[in-house]
Image 1 (cartoon, one colour):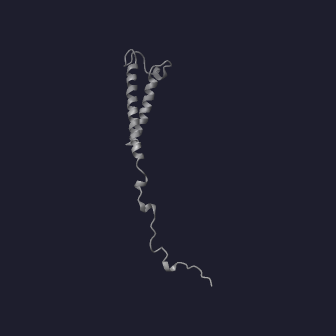
Image 2 (cartoon, one colour):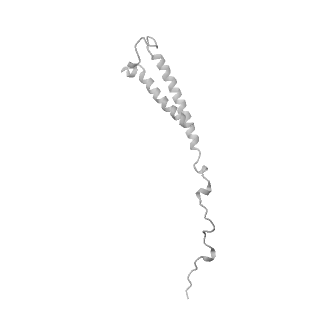
Image 3 (cartoon, helix red, strand yellow):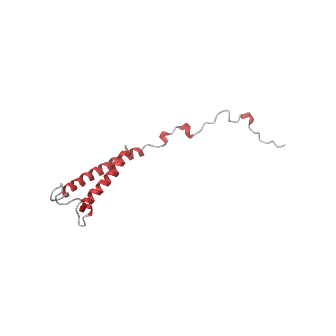
Amino acid sequence: MTSTLLIVQFVLAILITIVILLQKSSSMGLGAYSGSNDSMFGAKGPANFLTKLTFILGVVLVINTITLGWFYNQEKQKSAVDNVEINTLIPQTPASILPKASSAPQAPTTK
C-alpha cells in the first residue's frame, strides 16, 4: 500500500509542478505554450481552470502526504525482533558434540 501511495505522490508532485508552470505570471513560464485566446478555455485562457486544478492537486497532495506518514508510522511501530524466532538467535548445540563430564581435564596436583 505504501509503495502505491509513494508512486501517486511522485505523480502528484510532477503534475502540480507542471500546472503551476502553466499558469500565467510576469515571466509567463510555460504558460506561453498553453495556446492563444481562442483556446478551449475561452478568451481569458486557462487561468480559472488552472487555478482550480492547482488547488485540487494541492489538497490531494497534502492528503496523500498525511496518509503516507500514517502508514510509515504504523510500519515503524513494528519491531524487526518481533519477526525473529528465538531459536535462530541462539543456536542449539547437539548433545553429541558437548564434552562429557568425565573427560574434562583434571587440575595438576603438586607433591
